[in-house]
Length: 639
Image (cartoon, rainbow, N blue to C red; front, side, top):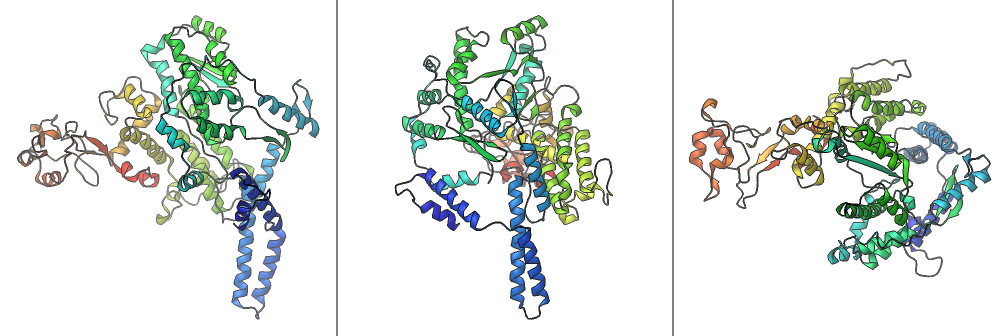
């Protein structure tokens, strides 16, 4: 902490320094401190162990001296573990389980995997000398970051609307508050950079629609274009003119361009930085700002596609070629692919493939780590999840883990790895059974085909720690809870794009909890619907105007598990379609007690009279435990 304060306040150049200079000074001071205070090593730990043994056996030593040496030894163990944990770049573990051997082995493994022994140069000749490897690598990145100096892009930007308001510009140029800076910093992982994610389910729904929608089967197709080194090729001049065209004020644009262009690179070869590259284009990957800027670049392409579509001049990939010329992007045709509606003739498909120069048709590879084509056996489609977990827990370095380390690995890595898939799709029971079996095999010390002794059933191991278990998760329960989160998102935020896509496709005139079966539903929607039973356990309909809540079938009576009203008469004489608004006096906007007493059981009448009625005629609203929690708490939901 002292080194950081000294670096931040120092001014070695004798002039006013900015944030970048202060950060550079801090890095220098930390480096000086690190050299003066080397981490505890095996020799230090060995000396402290001997010292502890001596003071424990020396009757003349006080208890305070014993405690002091013990404290230093604990610090030595902690610092050694922390040192190797950081070098191994393992983010899932926690400190304190004495897994130094594991971290050391993992670091050695990473060094071997990352070592570059040779490269092909631009003439496809293999080179393996260090000097030649450095030359090839530096030349490659120098060419990649060399600007093509695009000039004729005014026409491409002509249709870009000015969408940024003066109020938005004012907020963008306002000084950042201390709280905003703190919030942004503490959202980051200590050794990672945050970035936005895409929406897997919306993309999958689009491809499913092309395959199954009658209006799309014969005339629609999708082109998935893979941009080669997309971030690294963005032209700065194009980026600057685009931002100004969209209405961002010049002051803010100047700040952004400074962030983009004030960068230099070195090539890290076998742990050593080589060369010096000053780029002329490109966005830094890993910077959360870069993702948004790249999306704005793509917005220029979308605007021009719409313009050419209106003018009926959208042919081939000519527009994409124009986009390449002005933005610096380059289409990788080998990784791009096509998707056709089922009824598009084969002859047409071949003609389009030939004209576009894209040969891949069908599965569309992966999108954000999940297969884009979910046809056929779901056990085969999601089999890769089991393979990844097996690779993780069967890696040779895990043999150095303590029992506590294994527990954390299972909870933080093995149990968490399927979450990305399970938050979108229902994994088949056969897949979750294989995953559970692999985790159980790992926990009980099995290796290869040799099984360890299973001293308890896995169900007992998965029980909560208060009940004698280890709180390992039931994957089927986690899967249901994650899908319930998606379903609640549709219920709770009907105006978001995610909800609108599914509403337009599956429940235009009803609500997402309606159990009616839609025509040709996607596997994503069927997976989400499988969580209805969990949502129903705590779902309640809050009375607004009351005209959409069924008195006898909807859960609108507050209870530990919300339910419908209990009738006063026999069920056969009830009106099934009766709505709650029947019992609301429209003149006074209060409950009509005479009608309530005539139809509903006395116990429920007393509860209903305590329900507030909206005086602003707001619509009825679904509510439940997920809204109360704010964010879904899986431990509670699974129980």
